[in-house]
Length: 424
Ligand code: AMP
Ligand code: MG
Image (tube, rainbow, N blue to C red; front, side):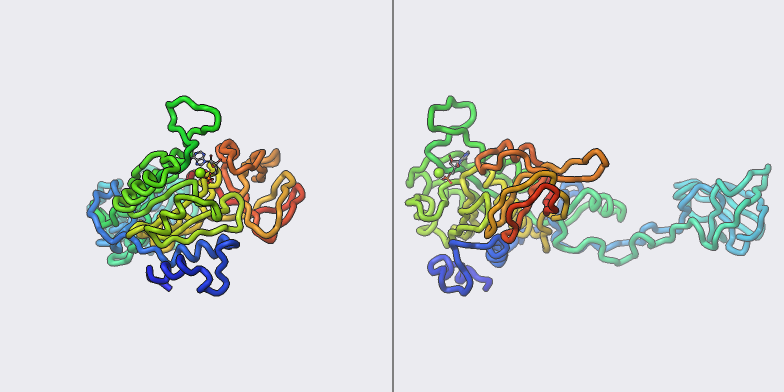
């Protein structure tokens, strides 16, 4: 099932699929569903190497040369012939610096003082480190014989000529910039930036800078979304906070879908509510509305409006962040061209506090990973866990992920965490 037609079928007739229950959607199942409809951007741009940070490579990068491209010393010491490794006294006939090679050839009984990174002089294949030698005028005495070919970095040891260094679909990170620079490559082919439009919905929302009356709240979702999207390096189109007015919402939705590859909204997707967003999305798109068996983040919508992918996130501020990290982030990386986006890594750690939890749904509690008095990393929840309490998220550096099978936990239980530092 890979076409829009099946999305349409599904949106119109959810019961057409076995084991598909929009009212009790498992987290993994929802993820799988979204995954099958993601078609990455295809426009390719040529970028100066530095500008490719955070972008996805559109072609393989192959090595145009061996790296390093000459045999060189891994240590400061003396370069000598392999046949001399057991010789305890050698004559020093010159010096090889990094960037300034020794011109001559080394013969039996001779050696060359050599610095780290300097090319191995002709005739040599072994370096004895400085600490194993004692200088004696024009000679050195070797206190401990080196092993054959010790302390030499060979041509092609890092990368071989013609080798695929980074594959198409790779998301560029700082090490990759350096790796490509080490090949002398100045420009790369990358996919264009993904355009993501977003808006908040709700009559109660007020933009920052305006006074607040009873019953109103400041629109914080557009700020967390701005932050999360900026970290992903996508192009952002902020369409504002839109009142629950069908005409305004319709105009904004269509405008967003026309401009962007992806439209994200928050609020107004609760299933069962007489809700304008749901009506509009049914009219203009192929959208599925789910009650995901998770907390927070139960109502969630995914589909297409025109050519744009659509994510309808819940209104509650913490739920917005949880659903973004659990569903939207991976999807955006895929749409950006990354071949196999890695979900946020998960690992196990001991939780120092008891946790109350119902079985039957996955919970994403906000946690703080910390080192205890013995220097061991442990986790504790960041206080009250209501889905409107953004402070719990702000204090957190991880999600404590409690599967649907998990119930109440005693202090000291092992839990799974997903680290957010450096990501959020
Ligand atoms: P909704 O999903 O529209 O029913 O909203 C659920 C809760 O989230 C309500 O308490 C809203 O006031 C709140 N909410 C919705 N959108 C935002 C927003 N952009 N910023 C802050 N709170 C919001
Ligand atoms: Mg609302």
